[in-house]
Image (cartoon, rainbow, N blue to C red; front, side):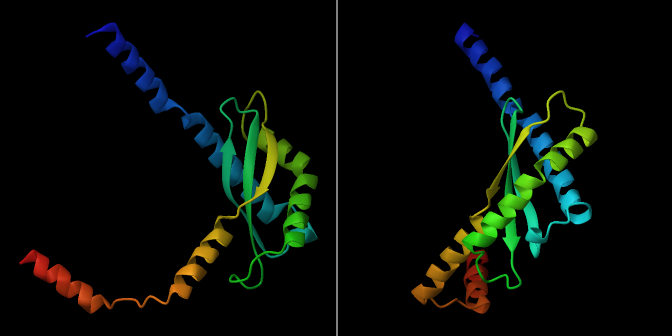
Amino acid sequence: MSPACIRNKRLEGRIMGKGYRQGRLAEEIRRIVSDLLLKEIKDPRLSGFVSISAVEVTEDGSYATLYITKLGSNAAEETSGDEKNDVLAAFKSAKGLIRREIGRQIKLRHVPDLLFKFDTSLEYGRHISKLIDELGIEKTEDKDEEKHIGSDRE
């Protein structure tokens, strides 16, 4: 084997293991904050269904970005800008409590600084569904699909 091949093998090994610790830390942070939302954080600005949809931790573990989802009384309606700002303000005011609880439950040398962002994937999904519905494409029946699948098997 040439030296270049050996070097590439070493780099592949590093890339395969990259991000594993950050992923575990992100899931633990998501679990802890979700428990806090259920049990300890009692802020009226967090009324309705508020959840942490995802957490991303930087490679060095200094920052964790928490993506927040809020559903109102009706799941089909979008969250207004004022509601989003209120939810983000509530999380920012509870930031110290959340960091302290993360530090208490996870043994870390440095607890990551928390950044809060609103998760827009739900709204984007609604927008795409609306566009598809506006196209007016009719759905095919399952029986037609079964006929095609059955003819392929023969």
